Image (cartoon, rainbow, N blue to C red; front, top):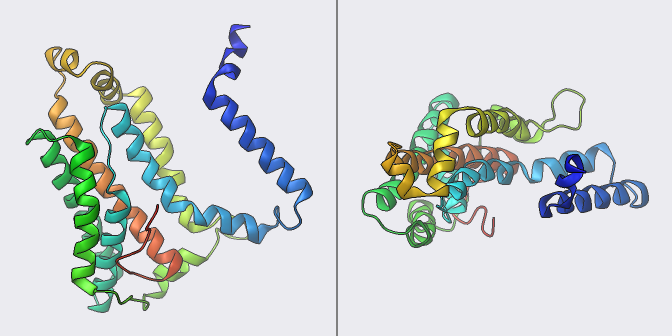
Length: 243
């Protein structure tokens, strides 16, 4: 019976409901299980799947980042501006990743060094980062991108229905799982979430770890911004509203 106890959890119940709905749609909804529809459905959740990865670590550590969609939009705008300026794609991607990490570092400094609640800080930067995007390009959009980015955003892996946009998530998700479950850093993140004071007194560098988690959130949001921009071939300040 203990082996089946996992079935009684809320997460397992939601998972079974999801599997049931997918099977129902695959059998009874015309075109649902087609290669094109599956590819589009997977591509549509590529950037959301990426954003979830650092958010899990932050929530475990008793923090939150509400500015993820705004960081995605702002990094998308910066990528568009760099391509407009004829910067090579490799340099543009590297610069955007650094910029995203800097946005996360700003959140982290406000939370860990000034002691402000992450809910309040990221609620403020949610508006600030998107506002910066509007300052940079206004309400216009940037639609001209190099072929390597648009091909990445629209093509599938070989003949499979798997879009290239989901590949970054498929690479990063196992790495996040290994770090969280199999490394000392993961155990320290859990200890911070379990009891921050006890973790601090036991020698865990709680401030440093929490700061790094916010930096990681910004970095992954930059990856999501690149994926989103390649998928829609569009950079605007209002990208990912509601994500």
